[in-house]
Length: 294
Image (tube, rainbow, N blue to C red):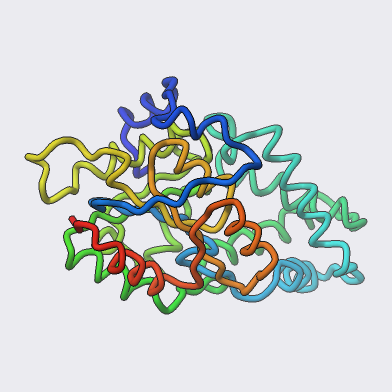
């Protein structure tokens, strides 16, 4: 099920000039600190922001192979092999296949290549069995859990008339099954925009602008002016995709260091990003900013 309208898909294909052209020229430099004056909408990345993986990729992949009678998989090679397969599949079929492949077809190519690059030879029947087990597993809540601050933060936003939605480089399974199974429905996340549906990926400004357009329908104050990018806050965990992508679109942005990666978080801060450890820190930041909410 696609959550983005045909109009949004059309908008995502149009050329959108960055709102702040001076920011668009920034690459490895630092960004000036900016505090929002008003927040009417919050967009959020999924994995590493509101949802965490359970277990390791190695554990899930080797476990699936073992269940299918395939022994001797070198665990030390799986992560690197998956990384190579993921990059190659993404380059060949961007946005999880867009209109060319279903998400399931895309992931099958990626998974089969992962084992191939790890030196595992399987028959076509074995490939089908292993893939189906992995695909089903990653489509369930076995591999995911909510960060404990996600629902309290979303409830706080709702009390303050802030519209919240997902903006993620992901396929539609998050919206169709994973998020609802974790307790996040359209009551908590009013809109959901995935790169698979819109066939454009962060940090492209068109994806951010499409998300704003989707979220405007849920604003309690629609009689006011349309939501300006400066009235939106994006929360994510990737400097280029989430922070720079949002800032180049004129959207405020903060990053979360969920896994205590001090070196990476320090580099983000050096380059001008506001970095917090959890969503309660973001709530406190908005409180200290004394900005208008909703």
